[in-house]
Length: 316
Image (cartoon, rainbow, N blue to C red):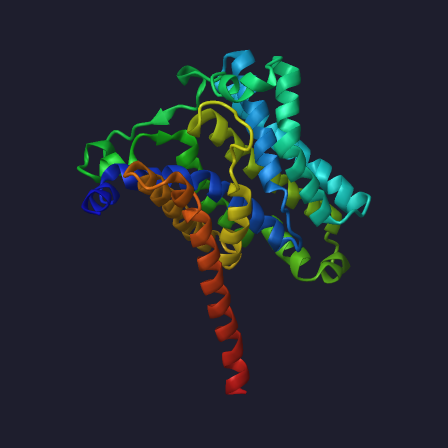
């Protein structure tokens, strides 16, 4: 136990929390914006899987991490717009579209990887993770002043560029939602689409923008997973982060700041599970820890929300 506590109080543990939280935060921002527009995108897991695959492949074949990163973003946006076409133009249930994307993200990406790279099934898991070398990964950033500060420097400096970008995007997304006309239109469509349309807002256009933004954030998250976190691609490597992001969005009250803290909570849970494994706890017991904390946190959140809803009725 003392060994576990010493590991939890080390700079490396706090460093890992921020590192693990970054892809969750990207997906959480994606969920927040579409929720503000009045619908849900449960296909975040699949979008991140496709972005992770094509980002890593583009980086490998072009020998440029920047090309791979841009391809990951384009794939995320392109697939999200395709989801929008099925949902908004063909009037398919958006939930069913999201489920289809998630299913394709699991099996379809492995199939595409085998087609593109000609890797056999037996070697797929071992070989695909080796496609990305350190020079093809998104670079880490050492902040000159902060890295020299004891303890704090080892926590905040040396992260991937996309880790810092995740928290920057949290601020920019909040500004977009509450300080721009686009954000006002997104929130207006989400609150009352008919009223927004009556004052000249194109509801369809706003919904496409919202789902494209969710695809962009999923692209960031997928690129982070394959080109920084794991340095390569493997089947189901996103490991439920898209679904955890939906929980983080709900726990954060649909707001960027709340979503950020919820993402950090889930990042802490996953880092804790890793630490338990490192001190000898059976992996079968350690791996469910993040998901158990997710369920417990949602239960607490639901209880608090119901309690707050009852107070005005009691007062009345």
